[in-house]
Length: 419
View 1 (cartoon, rainbow, N blue to C red):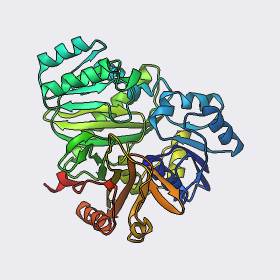
View 2 (view 1 turned 45 degrees about the vertical axis):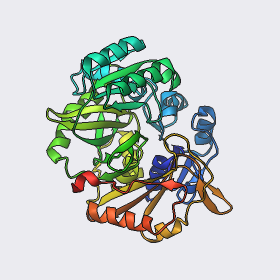
View 3 (view 1 turned 30 degrees about the vertical axis):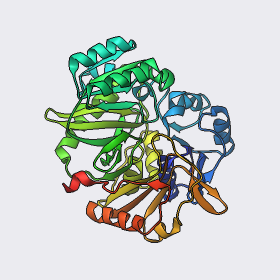
View 4 (view 1 turned 120 degrees about the vertical axis):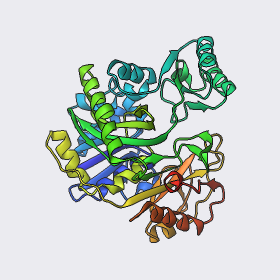
């Protein structure tokens, strides 16, 4: 197989690495990729949204499968474009990608098909939204309706914070068109977990679950980010709860999309929270989560290429997973998620890999044979071990030996498991 991965972040590095390790895969391309991926794939300097150039490349190289990583090209219709060219692509159509691209659309689907989620209201008028918030009280959640790079959600513990969020989003158009409509939800308290599934033609292959850490600082404090670390498995979520989530959320959602005339192909990501009434949906994504991918995919025991080939052909496959735990910590540039300074030198990353750690590049750049920061989230450093505690110790021992001037990371990834 020849595989083309679309995207340039840590998630895409994990996807490319998993394909590169598969005996069935002869060559892996990543477009556009980043400098740190070059040991696992051939980087192709084509933007993730340049559909024509990407499709032409796939045709010229006789690519067997194109795997789309990020949400933006999916929302803009890359799968439709590739399908029209007769190419095999893994990712939802533009219509099906709305399950992530429009939170109000996702809520309407959940309402219609009785899929458990938080009570909510949808607003385009700021005063109406604020009136609803005052009626409900805090804590409460305000979400930009459209894509906002993982930063369009405000979990407001105080009323004023929620009111300010509405002014920012609708009034000041903080996320442009994406925040011209907001979804205001009841606050749900409980243990969160990420449940991702491979989906094609009604077939569903669920993955092992993970837990992400969204807040910037230790103890789940500070602003929401794209994710500061993750781990898998999640011992505090029982197999029975995972099965309930599969039966009440994953299967009904896949069936609902087919019923609506927009069948889903791709990664269905269910961001869930375990409440007293059982698991409920916080959000859906139409692609792999980041950083969850970096701790879930390395636990796959099966040949990734063979599995994807079988899935796309509608053939059954026995998808196997390792028992070992995986825990990953994000290294971010100082100032993230607000103002970041690029170009700061990273320590020698070979020292980390020599210690048996996995390094996934997200926002790095090679300058004079040395990696520098080139984005908010720069790296994810992960370890696999027999237990989560061992994986956690392995990662943090490795990080402690290196200078991280100009960067920061959380020191408590996985803390909920060890309480």
